Length: 62
Image (cartoon, rainbow, N blue to C red; front, side, top):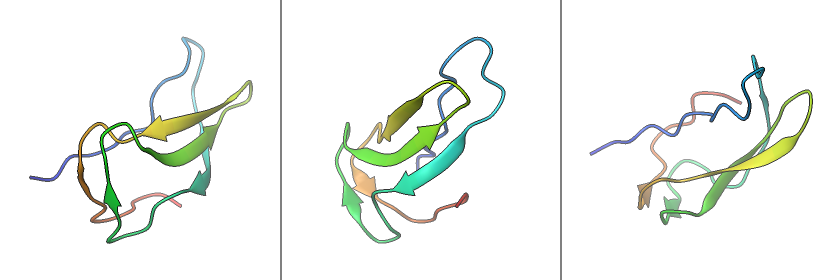
């Protein structure tokens, strides 16, 4: 079953974020808790983790 990984809201005032780096590509296996991307807002940078084990099926944002 597919599961979407959505950019987390990192603060009450956050209105946008930019994906600065993808650590995985389509077809890669990821474990729950593994970092899949790095995002940046106007105030900070953060890592996005996979919530589940599985394969990357598609990347919707570059």
